[in-house]
Length: 471
Image (tube, rainbow, N blue to C red; front, side):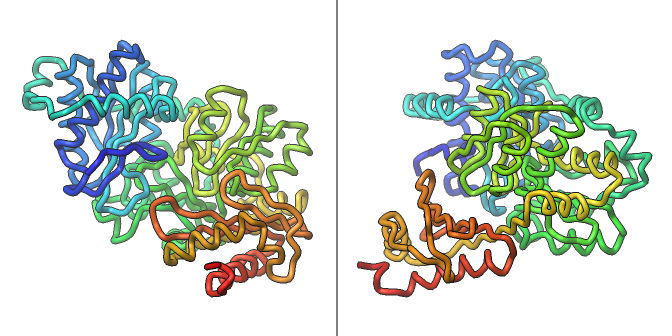
């Protein structure tokens, strides 16, 4: 099976494509890239998540890097991806994370973090893939513990340094003294214990033990996966609930009433807080499927806004090359000025907690204040499994601008930056995109209320059964 890097590293099914042999080859190619392109003289920092065999895979990768002549530091425990991003920046090293993030339990993966503390750029990943073509077989490695005794591999607690930095950037004392409690669902992933190490009994955890099966579902903090956290928040009277994906770089939230707070709203809340309370400025960066409320905020605050294709790598590129206030995507990847050029679900959750404490308002009140100022913005998305012919037919139908009316509303503008976005006469919008790997159509919408947003999506889905789609 060919080794192929996707939007955020290499991922494959364990024992099918994700094998020790393939990991050996990927590690060799990465080592060659680091050495031959002078990425850093400080080698690699390696972390791993709670998945099946992640520690063993991490030890093997560490051994390969050591045999390739690179200094190696490896985490002494399961660790969140943002911790390794911080460590890469701190040690001026390349970060390697053995993780498949929010993917189902059968997957594992290999993320590369550049020394600046964020994901390797698409150009850098392309360079690693070119090195892959030159690696023909596994390199022989000595036992991990032997390499440790020789001093070629060092084990470290990266999380301690990361949490020290978080404590400098977030007013932890104010959160502790406020008396609020935070419900935290790390989804059996590598974010377990991090909030609790900072805030002690202010944090009430669920799903914080190690379970490589993640309770039987993919560890992704989407609305449909938040029911347990919502019930936990209500039962314990928490002021907010924070959920993180399997490697804790993404975030999902619920308010004090157990209501889901989307990443769209998180981005908008952060933009307002950083401008009004922190006195910060910068460009607002959002992906193509993210809320238009940010456009209204950018105008109100006198800030530039940029829209990228969907995928955090495009946002990250803007952060690295420019002055970005907030940047993010609808799937829970959020970054804020003053921290890493990277998604960090732990930091973002704490920044929202700080906002609640400093404002003296509940999370639901802060969200309502946004709606009062910029109007209601309700978001809805469905991933529709269909056959390949209908998927391609629907994309062609939309690309040719034949979808002119949706749920009784006229389309007034088409934008094909990434998929086909239909802007309607009342300012609502609907986006149709296709998956590149599955017979799946992703249909997104935003309107002034939830029922309208759902109607736009459902009306579009009805076209899949009409003959015009297959013409």
